[in-house]
Length: 128
Image (tube, rainbow, N blue to C red; front, side, top):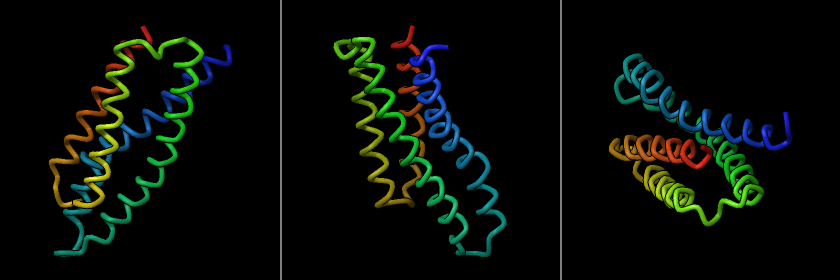
């Protein structure tokens, strides 16, 4: 195993946390907490989202650091697929900021997840 395999592993682990966490929240946590909480009590749901948000900040930090390192090492900055992927990363950032301001707009949850899946796909294309 080379150093760059380790960097790629960290990148993939952070991506799995970010995208997998979104899926877990949407498919399991939100429905369970909505179904089991008293009417109008959004405290547990907010606590789960806040905890995921903290992990997300760490994951995004790892993604940025490892992504920059790999793009530089493998001379990928001029790759048009990478540039589209990075543009979608900015879009996700904007969507997350909007979601923080309007958490009741559930369309933002779906948009963040779908754009995140597109980023994963483009990452696979860049790596191949």
